[in-house]
Length: 227
Image 1 (tube, rainbow, N blue to C red):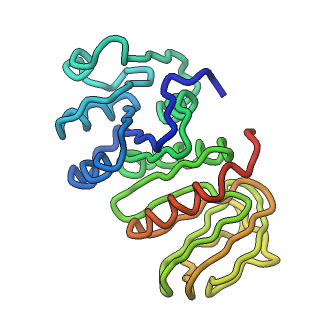
Image 2 (image 1 turned 120 degrees about the horizontal axis):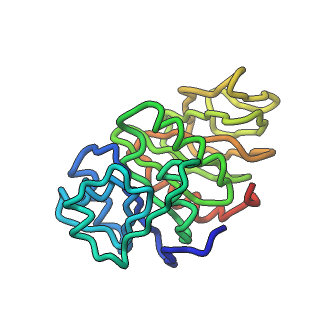
């Protein structure tokens, strides 16, 4: 990991440029003390009356007015063009949990890139928050106290196998892969336990289960080494 720009022993909120529901953003802001913007995510923050504690990215999309409003020492220009602003920001944040908002809406290519970045950092606890869903990379084992009937989708970013309890359609003995079988729209029969043999499996839950997912990720800790 790079030397961090942002270091926190508490969850950090990372805001991206796919502006969404202002009320949802303000609600998540109430939960955290440290807020980072990935490039034009700073414009969305400024729109709701908050400036980021740090602005990270290649800064090719943040407005001049917003950039000027942020103290120069909080602006961190990362000039390389081989990664997305989400990737740039994640590399320079050290925290037990990163909540990302503003990455699941907007352009589909940006959404796919964000999910690829999550698979690239399996040692990090990251939850992407959308208006309908939350997405995270699964640790080696996770226990989720979900209500019966909850939609549970599993999406592999590389070939992976695992086991499950509490799912309507168990994954035991199945190889999930991007070009083969995926696990969309499964259902919880009640509390769910998932074990995975290797990194690369994302979980997608309704946004109503965000707190359950966050707590379970933190409890599981970083079970995969950095790739």
